[in-house]
Amino acid sequence: MLGIDIVEVNQVKKIYDKHERLFLEKVLTLDEIDELLAKNKRLFFQHLSCFIAAKEAIFKALSDDNLFWRDITIVGLPANCTVRIKQKDYSQKIALTFSATRDIVIAQALVI
Image (cartoon, rainbow, N blue to C red; front, side, top):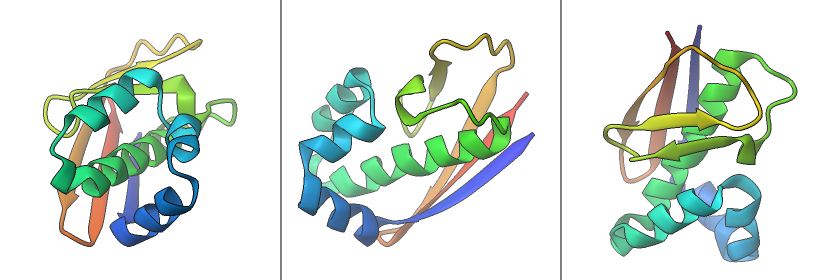
């Protein structure tokens, strides 16, 4: 199964500017927040957009209505990503790829 998602970086920035840490805590796990905050600050919103696009692509690829934002943990984004899914027994591997510009991020999730 394949899932694809496109995210506008400015939209993510607007949401973050309005809700800040609360937004991060709603869509990211604590490990992801730590990883995001440790990255280059200049690319903060691009990296945050990568997390969001990747999770949306995973939702689409898995077609699981009982899967929520914080059930998915992505480590090592954007290169060499590892995906962990909490409370689910997904034996399949999920491969992620990204394309990013200053304005948009495209993520593809392939369930192998």
